[in-house]
Image (cartoon, rainbow, N blue to C red; front, top):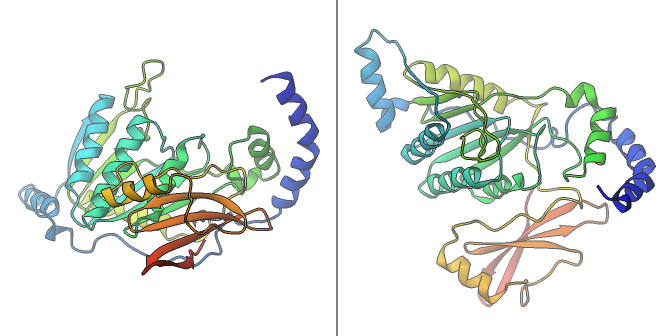
Length: 323
């Protein structure tokens, strides 16, 4: 860190501490009081290909479950992508870390493909170890078949260490309560559990740093038990707050979806900087998606509202998305 950075940090430190102390008075995490629909695992997994296959195998072995340890990191990555690609009805993911690096983006793209073919996707992520770039997972929330929930989130949504550490310092009893679960469940029929989060280091493709964790592939009746633990977290009111589009002014504008349909690419080329599209009074940023454009609009209170513009005739209709 340079001397200028240190000087700026010191200059704003008192204001940061005051704001954090005041913000730390709240007992529940941000978004805990927002409306949140209850949902549960697939009731009849045997109606899916994977569910039917492993239900038959379990019956042939006195109702037991099957397990296989996956020790090699890249095999853990390939197993996840293949499982996601095989999903027919539901996908549930629960992770402490979901990085925005190469493998994280590939898993994100696999989830988008699944959602495009009608799979319901629920993603629950802890907020304790997010870094710049991890926001790519939030882009999934724009898909109608995908819902993101953040476990016990920080109020500050940026990546300034002083702000984040200060908030933790004055709200440690709540923010020290983290979720270290690592779980992927497909169609309530097969699951992957163990020590690996989502990221290059965990899948042993980072040349500079690798983690020696293991995964366990599980199939049969055990999948329903694992789904029950996911549902308990997912539907809890306090820590698992619904992801809110309201973010601090320091948060980064989300990137566009990696594999846009041709229609979206055409719109992006015609309006690379939003020219010709209606701008909110207080500009925040925009993201082009198939058949619609979403804007981030800064409110007077310093938060961001998310506005959706959809084409209608020769103009646009506007709606504010619920935070």
